[in-house]
Image (tube, rainbow, N blue to C red; front, side, top):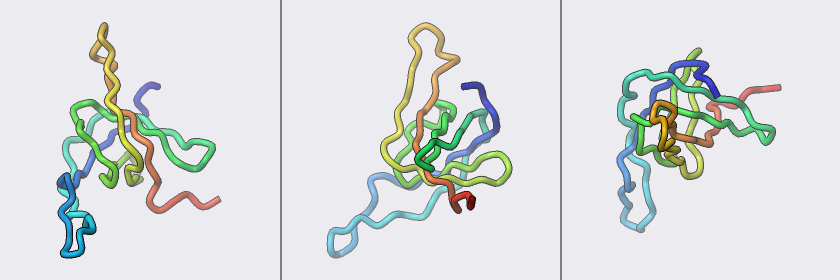
Length: 105
């Protein structure tokens, strides 16, 4: 998938701190980093598949990805760092995310 926009990632501190009951509480998002080329598309189940620059690694569930045109996604699941042993220029972070707010049909 070729880049189709510029993306930044705003990260939360990990692991999340726990409250007095032991429940993880999300910390405040950090500021978004440098905009880098990436790509994204909506999947048939309504989630989004994003590919961002490996310089953003590590990325975690709950982090935010900001894209071209003001779109914002919340990372869901566990992102994966995909490496190519022959050509590192094509490395990327594979992310499943939810668009905030979702597109309305």
